[in-house]
Image (tube, rainbow, N blue to C red; front, side):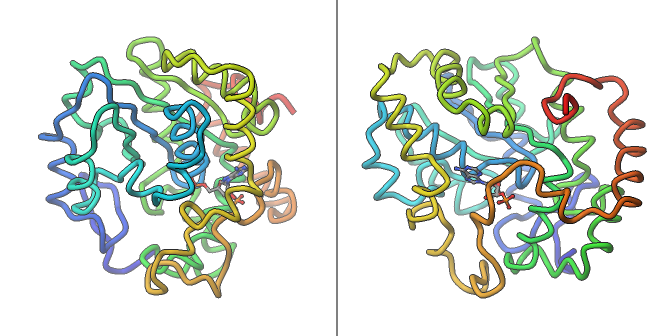
Length: 287
Ligand code: A3P
């Protein structure tokens, strides 16, 4: 983990963009508008993919916005100083992005009509993706070896805290607030159905051709070619393109080519302990 990371309420955040003040502001004072749409994830769960999908849905499938405006300006990271300013200046309805655990989410959300889309992903694939991402994303700090990162991830000793706590915290709100839960795996399996469900949740009527355009423009291949979302516009001291590719593989089950049998067993043990209360409801548990 990066040595200069920010610590806020017991959770570590990457240095540079976040500060204790910006995180505190996001929680305590961020003004939520009733038509805000929050894209919330634990890192590496499909955040940037969801930003593309939501940007396209808001524009009825028209890809012009996605192709000409950086994703961080379309769906700002409002927990950062820079993102906060962008968010303040955006017209409604706003798309807003964060990796915040529920207990740090803007307080104003809970008395608003704003919506959250929470995307989750098989934590084993999250771990693998997070490991590779940490090698190229400078503020995240060198993960050292896969074995080292594996242990840290299981212990929650990574930026943005424990995957298990993040997921269980958000899932406890299911049915209580305007939160739409969707998984990376569902989107991979049935993108059309997923886009249609998202449209329904957002009250957007897209015809078949518009949904097709969303699917095409948010495909892994299209996103890889789009400099507005493939991270290549970021400076080298943030994202070192020589050390990896942000849109790396985009598949389910890559953990199988990374985990040893022993790692798989110890992962399952921790997973069962921590997820007992929610067990059996996620797509990756069905296989
Ligand atoms: P991999 O590293 O497994 O390839 P985030 O945006 O939360 O950081 O998540 C990044 C992960 O989502 C990466 O996973 C990336 O390749 C994947 N991803 C992004 N866009 C995608 C798409 N259109 N289809 C499938 N996977 C996508």
